[in-house]
Amino acid sequence: MVIELNFKSGKPVYLQVVDQVKSAVASGALSPGDPLPSIRPLAEELRVNRNTVLKAYLELENQNVIESFPGKGSFIKRSKSPLRREARHALLNQEIDQAVVAAHHLQVSRADFLKLVNERFDEFEQRRDAASASKPETA
Image (cartoon, rainbow, N blue to C red; front, side, top):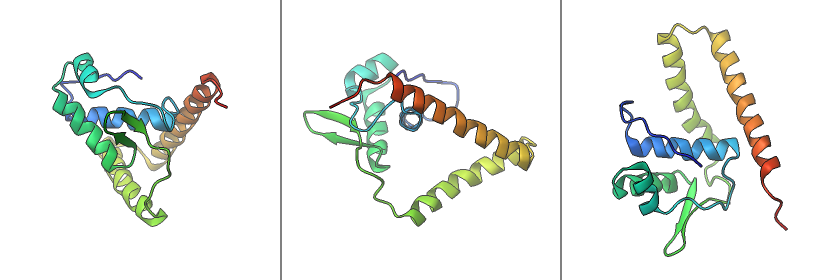
């Protein structure tokens, strides 16, 4: 997994790391049980403070994306979300609301917005299928 940071984006670096790990999981580039890089080497690779990577990993733990074990590292979480369906939908509705507001300000119509959403779903599914096909089978 390659994490690319944009220091001029205005978005906090740790949130960029969080978003890219979540995107990699959604696309299948990272699967349940896959290890994440250790904090120190990743911080050196990204040229950021170790606390920035630590903060990203803590946020990923809070969002139940990863789990960490002292002395072993951090891994993509195997279990399903502990949140009930209604809670997951409420969280997703907040993200959708932000996207709808952005679409309004960018003057993107509802039809175009929904078309873009479908295209993004298709792209993630294609990447997930490609990632699944390229990973060796485990017994």
